Length: 330
Ligand code: PBG
Image 1: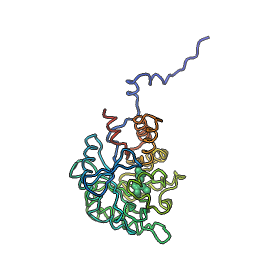
Image 2: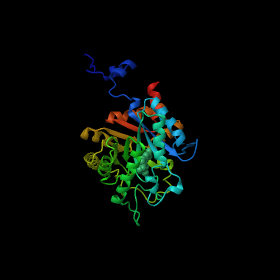
Image 3: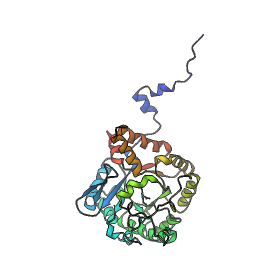
Image 4: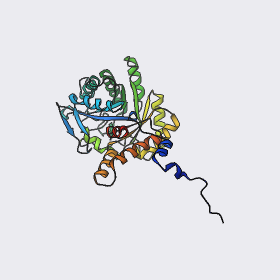
C-alpha cells in the first residue's frame, strides 16, 4: 500500500526566511503610520502620561522636534491633540476658536521645524469643554447636533488657517463634514483635506487618551448619544457613505483591532483611503502585557499593525509609530 502524501504542503512556503519574505502578502512601511502627539502648555517641558507608558505631552517649543524625529524615520504625518489648561475649558468651548490656542501654535511649530511633514488636527470640542463632551450640551446633558456643528466649522477654519493639512472631525455630529467642506471652499482652503472619523464607536478603549488630554475626569455621563454602538456593523456603512457624499477625502474606523471587521468591510465596499486608529487603550494593552512578561513587545507591535494592513487599511494612527518605524527600518 502506498503512503498517502499531502498533495500540497503549504509548509514549503514557510520553511525559511527568504521564502517567507518572498511570499508575504502584506508589508509594513513607515509611510503607513500617522503619529499622534499631545501638546501641553508651558515651556521646555515633557510631561509623561501615566496611562500611556512611554508617551508624553510636549510643550509647543518642543513639539517640532518630535515631528522632525517622526519625519526622519519616514512617518509622513502627525496628529496633534491639546491638553488645554483647566481655566480655559468652558461650557461653550470658546478656546477651540482661539487662533492662538495650543493646537494652532503647535501646528505652526511643527511646520517651522519640519515643513515637509503633514499635519492633521482633531475637530471636536472635548479638549475645550468644561464637561468633557465633544459638543455643546443642553440642560439634560444631551449634545446638541446643529449648534455644535456650527462651532466645529469655525474650529476647522481656525485650524486650517494655522496650517493644518488635514482636519479630522472626531465628534460624530450629523452633517458636519459637508458643513466643514463648504466652509473650507468658501474660505479658499480648497487644498485642506478632510479625514472623517466616519465609524467612531462609543468605546471603553479611549480611557488613557482622555487622561492625556485631561477630559476624562471632567466627562459627565458617556458619549453613547453620538458615538456608534459597538453592536452595529451595517450602520458603519451608512456613516461612511454619508461622510463621503459630504466630501470626506479619507475615512477612519476607530478603535482598531476590535473593529477589523468594520475596517475590512469599509475598504472592500467603498475603495477609498481608509484609516484605522489603534487607540490609546489598545496601545496600553500591549504595553501592560509586555511589562507583565506576557509577550514580546516588538512582536506584539508588529503583529497588530500588520493585521490592519491585512484588513485593508491604507494607514494606521498609532502611538507605536516611532517604535514600529524603527523596527522596520532596522
Ligand atoms: C475626541 C477624541 C477621542 C479620541 C480621539 N479624539 C476620545 C473620545 O472620543 O472620547 C480617542 C483616541 C484614543 O483613545 O487614542 N473627540
